[in-house]
Image 1 (cartoon, rainbow over the protein chains, first blue to last red):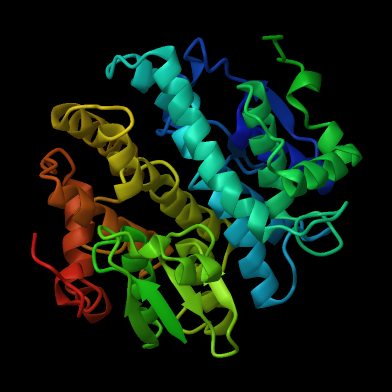
Image 2: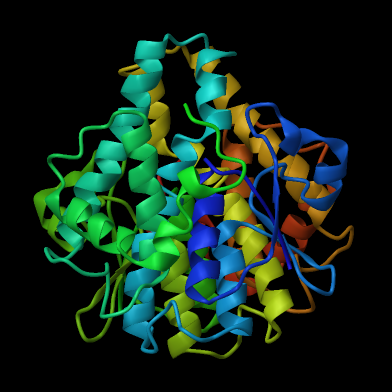
Length: 212
Length: 212
């Protein structure tokens, strides 16, 4: 397997956590998103969306979209499971993951922020107002949906929800978002960080890491 | 079962198609999103995200996020399947669905467009530039990923990918987006529209429909 990613991409970070949890270590290729390497013609031939991550299987099949990749890992490498066995539990985990992957992260990724300050000519302050607003909107809801404990988002083992929460918290911290109103999110994030699979997926320990 | 939705919500539209494909007809409750009924305290108690759709099971459990709801339907009402049986096929369907649900729709829904013209004080023309840009970016990739045929997005039966594509096309048409560069998307959309489950899910035939 081969993973195309970037140390700072939240979506690639999710997949790194899932791979680590399942004990898988694909060959890693970094695409420097700020330099636009994801728009190079050879990568676009692989993934026409020009986004990371993409996973290439041992058979040469290309998988895109972080949550689709994690579901494929779940289908092909079921142990340890990252989704509960019962349908309601699965729906709860997926609901939390999608509340991040659909309703927070897409609004604040690099291409979107660049469009706000580029073609739409918004100021840095307006861009920060935007980014802060969508993280706060999403975290307000998550805070009320998550348990108040030192543990995982759902149940007694790490799930897809944790794979999504931790990178989103990292993203929030990177822009200086104030997490003090979110004690549940902070406790779960801190709990996850103590797990080796999460620690090894941190942006700062990736080979392509560049300090801000 | 009870579905909270709104005729014009793309996310609710996806779930309506999936329910119809599976022959399920839950009680429907409409929340007038333009009037802000999704922010009423009784609905926020049910779904703290304040978004539609939400599905309440016969046991009173609340499910949120359209793709999580459709996965729950798949788990609990497996026939007819909306995902292929093989992991690669599943990843392909999920990848297409998420390319819409994560990378197009969240950027153009009502709350986002209102934030652009409200707190960020963008003009209608700038809002339209934004909306058009993200649909075009997403559709450019989808067009190259979809087959050129009168048929479903993937395989010989309707899947989650079709449940996501058709509402996104409707959304694009509503804002006057030019679909002429996307013959594959148009052919698949037209093919889907001829299926009763898709026809019955159209915004214009919902009881809460309000003509623009």
